[in-house]
View 1 (spheres, each protein chain N blue to C red):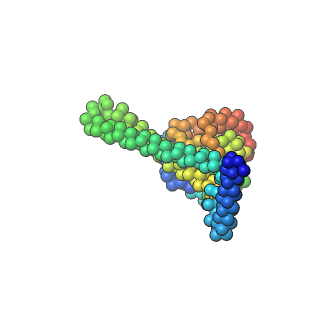
View 2: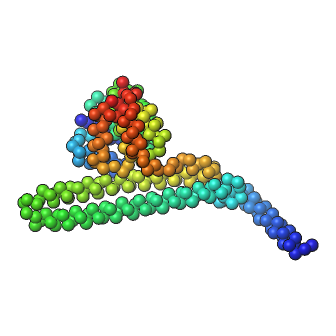
View 3: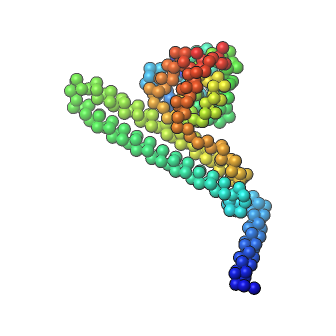
Length: 173
Length: 125
């Protein structure tokens, strides 16, 4: 037998041994209900596995977005607080003519803080969706679960305004 | 005008009521889910502002249920949500929702949506 044939034979034999070991592991894990390992195993051995691995990468990206949103909102809030503190200090020395303008600016900063605090709800909902998809993947190991995680649509408000602006009365009569 | 603010998040209910106050609306009652909202809905409520994603009864299901009640047949409903997919927006229309506000929003955008509903530009016109 040529060296290349020997190498090919050895490689194939090794792969068969690995495959058998994985299937043994799968069976024992399935018996004990440890599905997490089955999912990881499936991601490299079954046809849908690559889609699942891609799905996990998408989830990873979405989690990074959540983290970035949180950081941006927190920074914005800290900026608002810094500006508000400066305005309060200015209020102490402001002339009467200037006070109304300073108060209006202060009011604006407080409104901005309230608006930015919506990040808590937005990120909580996104994390809830991600957790739902992960749970579905863990038990069912199907990439179809990813359809539960729709991509955010950037022009959603403009589209909604157009649609609602055009809609006739439906169920309010 | 009295608003019924429906959201399972206490934070968001506070943010919404704060935003309403900033644009001049000081009468708001709250509900933390759809069932509670239906129980609180009466003829004094002039507008319902609801979140979409809530446990037990979603904002969409709430809108459908509201339209089945005598007190809710004509009351305007503003959906405030993170869901921005086109099919969601169309589903909201079909459920009888009159306005759609994507989070995050500012008090001025909220005012714009409320004005739009009551000026007749929304679906309830």
